[in-house]
Image 1 (cartoon, rainbow, N blue to C red):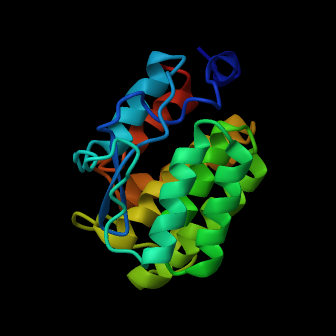
Image 2 (cartoon, rainbow, N blue to C red):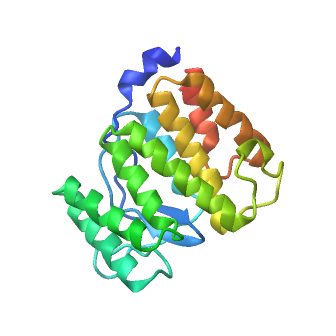
Length: 214
């Protein structure tokens, strides 16, 4: 099945699995996913579970508290407030996440939160911009070139900022597919096939979506 036939089946409102134990890795921290909505297709559900497979963790005592790892206390508080607000007031969540990013632009978690919720909401241009900014910051911290085509090939297991860069490039490939830019998405996937040949960040499911085989 061609991608054009698949695109309409993928809802922007379900970029994370409806499982409060789903966890992503941001800058080495384990992030229990609190942005939970029901996936509309099995393809997306598979991708989402694959995204978070590398690190499984549980939420802290309060079900709405996410373990973002070691962060500036004020940044963490803003992110926690944003997680809670997202369920009922997405504009407030957006504002809180933006405040967190402005306060500590060196932290990767605010980029993650922003590009996730904006992909949910269908603000794909903004989601792509924030993801690109976060990826640039991650590559800086990892000591990698800004240009993804110059990233190390077939490197061993990545962690911390390097993993965030790979994960975010995978997210960008998905966003580009949703924007109808299949050639750009494939370019990103080709980079991931060299930098992460084992598919540790879940990019192979996006490639299947791009090929229309899921």
